[in-house]
Amino acid sequence: MKIQTEAFRKVTAQTAQEICSRAELSAEALPFLVPGLSPQGFLSLLVEAENIGDAIRFLAFALPIREAIWWCHVVAKTSIPAPTELELLCLERTAAWVYEPDDSRRRSCMECAESAKFTGAAAYAALAVFWSGGSLAPEGMPDADADPRLGPIGAGASVLLSITAGDAKNLVERFETAVIRAVSIANGGNGWLPGERPTGGN
Image (cartoon, rainbow, N blue to C red; front, side):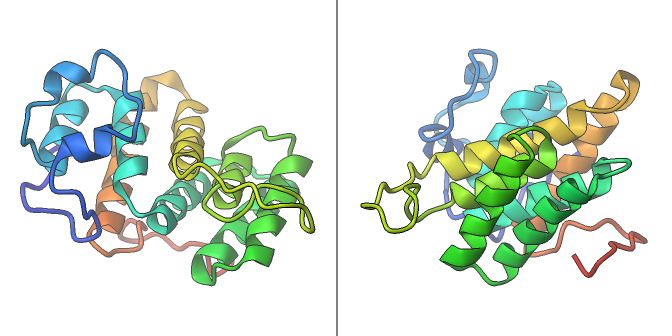
């Protein structure tokens, strides 16, 4: 697949190096990190090499946190074949926070993720919301601010869980579809593909 050469509208970093200084990528990705290379140029090299883990992590850190969490929500929503009620609740609360982020919605996502035993793409989408900012301490306790890397880490983990859960034969196709969704969101779109009919208004 081809990645656009023009800058992504929602990505503020001018170079891939700026993003990679926050994201921990593998040794396999480092040879592609040419000084001055644009985010879209670096992503193109990762996609061409089918370096799935690094491409997903890079995108999770490249996008603003709300957009990264919306991305993992959309990927999970379209990837989980028969979601449980708890998984649907995790995704519903994740979307609610994206639409209107506040601390009560953020903490309600943590409750869902905990109920799901922090397992699966939907739980990690909700956990990414909790990690997105604010205090990690229980309400009423002294604040313990979240490390700003945690939100993107959770979002990337959710996307990876979504795309690696299915048949291995279709892994590259699921990976490329997730990248297409991320590029849509990076350009101000909603990540849904043409003809999709998302359920539940999310």
